[in-house]
Length: 56
Image 1 (cartoon, helix red, strand yellow):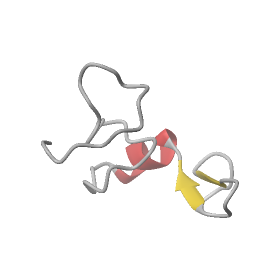
Image 2 (cartoon, rainbow, N blue to C red):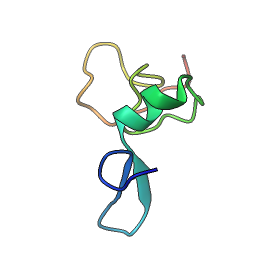
Image 3 (cartoon, rainbow, N blue to C red):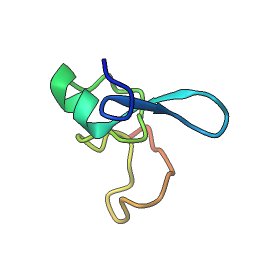
């Protein structure tokens, strides 16, 4: 894994995986990741909102 390409650390010091990392991994873990390319848990009407749903 390569920092900035696959992950970065947010303001709280937590590791956040990038969309590129998720695509390399090749599947959705269904945890509602911030950069999920499969949009798991995102509201369908607004992809910019961080609200997660349990519908997907």
